[in-house]
Length: 334
Image (cartoon, rainbow, N blue to C red; front, top):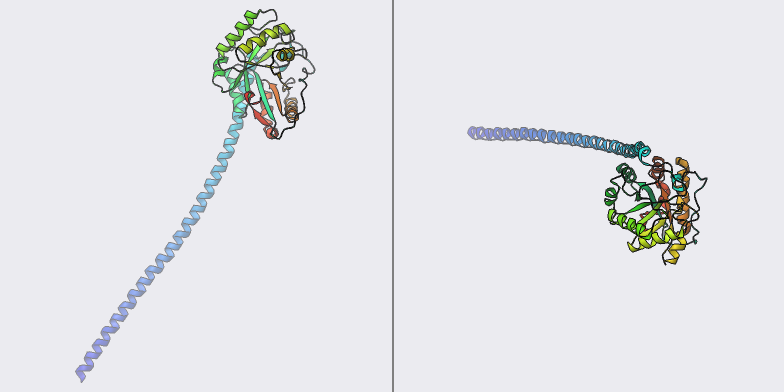
């Protein structure tokens, strides 16, 4: 009997040992699992916090980059316009008033009379920049990021690369020099009222060779030439033969272009507004507003300016004004 009790006691001790062992193992496992969970949660929180910090840093960096880029763009525009200013004195013939001769007029000749047209489509405005002749002009104009039609002066000793520069543009015009009533700084190869049919025709053919893709020309100066009906007949006929359209810069109110164009069954197209007859920026912005109003009234409008720093700065600062019209290149106006 005593032997059985000893066996039973040994069995109980074994079970107790096993139970305690299991309890210790469970406790250890619980500690490990609990510690892992707590560590994981802390690590997860650390990662989330670090992610938020990194995200904030990236946003801050992007904002700084955007501001820096904006400043760089503005700086780029100003730098290029300053470049124009440096070279203007060597190449340009002066303020926009040079289009009328040596004397400065209080107001440029009026635009042609046009019918009021109301359309459901957005009014179109084409802005022509005359006297383009060197790379600094092209760079400054293109830096504005708006469609401006460049009208290039023919190549000469001072501007030998004007045709090459034009060839790189999808749309361009030629600013053809014509005789003025009173102008001392005449361009080489200026067309004169005394020029024969052959001479004018040959000049147009030469222009076509230099500018193979030209479809539009407008007159540089030309107050005397465009007011002579015989000379204009010769020119428009020569241009028509080369499939080139004439846009009258209207440097004189006595222009005979409307009469000649009508006689030849062609549409008369002319500028409506000069932007920089007066060279200060405030006056130019006023003229930009006027051009927009003309476009709204007639459905289309043509404005002419020059690659002067104030003109380009005024255009740069007027981008919000253009929301009411569609700025287009000259080939999309008609």
